[in-house]
Structure formats: C-alpha cells, structure tokens
Length: 116
Image (cartoon, rainbow, N blue to C red; front, side, top):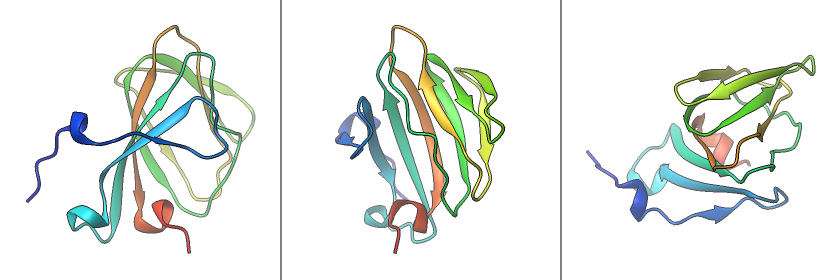
C-alpha cells in the first residue's frame, strides 16, 4: 500500500499545452502496472487541445470551473464535484473559464501515460 501526499508530487509541464501542468500521483513508480492516477492543473483562460486518443479516461473535477468540449463540439460546464467519462477515440478538450486554477483528477490505463 502507498499513501501519497499530492504536495510531494512535482508538477510537469505538459509539452505543447501552454498553461497545463500535471502530477503523476500513482503509476508504475508506486507499483501500479495497470492504471495511472494523474492530477492536472489548467491556468485561467488555458485549455487542452481538442484531441483524441485510443484509451478511455475517468475525470473528477477537484476545483475551479470550466467546460469540456465533447465530440459534437458542445461545451458542457464543469465545476468541483463533476465526474466525466471519456471513451476511447472520443474527441474532447477542457478549458478553464474561471480566475482560479481548474484542477482535476484523471485516471487512465498505463498505456495512456506511457504510449508505446
């Protein structure tokens, strides 16, 4: 068993995503060989690109407000306590619309953090 304090995990800039940082909280380094738990922080006004990938992920919004753009281009409001399931190959992006950091947990299969 591992008990981890988020404050002990360093932030990584997400290459190509201005204003987006992540922390890999639980992954292979902690002995997890199937799933990875990450925490993302998006600066005010910043967003992830509108993209797809071949793995699903689970999201829980921790703080801040914004929206997720779905595969149909519809913006769905996000705030603390909202949960999102993004299926394999489903186009999406997340945008921060508030003056604070938008923070969310994102759980993916191992291949989502370490693409082959």
